[in-house]
Length: 309
Image 1 (spheres, helix red, strand yellow):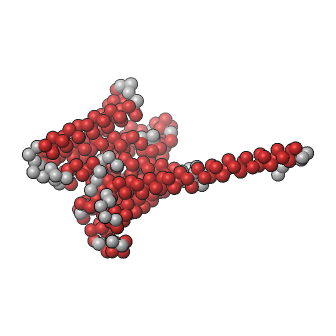
Image 2 (image 1 turned 180 degrees about the vertical axis):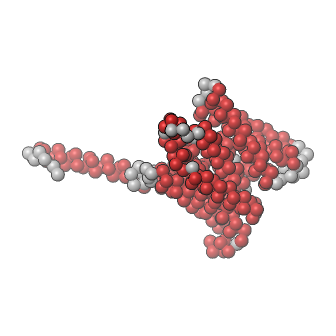
Image 3 (image 1 turned 45 degrees about the vertical axis):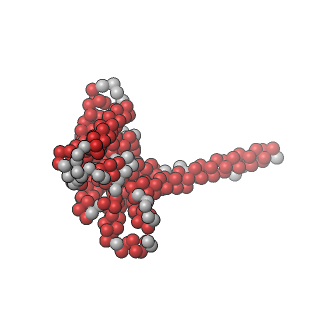
């Protein structure tokens, strides 16, 4: 199927809009998670969503996306609570707390998922699709939910940009000038939960963390300014969503979620190689240029010329 035929399909148009918004909002909020060295937080919250989805199915007995997203959001907030308790009331560092919560919640999710598949529930078929996402099953109401959550995420990040910036680079100074650091920290975590819950159906709990962090890491290569990085990260996420969806729609039997993540990885490789200051090519060029100047200076010194301009 050609790209023009794909773009004329109304269902594909809704999916494109959904993945575009998902990539944009994930890239924006992922920038703050990356700068605060909380890359594992998105991964933890994504995996923590699985038991919430399973419990929502057990309690309701129906495969409703609204119930699943509600369950995932509740599970994500419980995971945030456990991470806060572990880091505040014990000597466990945050990366260890994130690892403990990730593994325990995901283990519980797999146990519940296996139990559901072996039980007498009639509608359990397809529940495991939430592990890697099922973008093709998105409908108009799902896109409306994505649109609402994405707009809220971007609006909150815009309103609190200055506070999030201080919290990301100098939390001690932010606390010293009277900013509610703990509250802002919780707001960022809740925004990450929102992004993860929104993207579960499209990308899945396993791959959602990649869509949060990879665009932010790619954007960091291109700039030293935070607002430019946030915009670039959102653009990289948005383009990854569009390109992954189009590739999936034009080539048969290729899953959309993994293709979106691979598209984001492509931007990362491009940034790693060709970013103007931090890229590998630029570093090799500067190193070679410095070496050439040094060798030329030594050659001139041997010839009796002591000043090189």
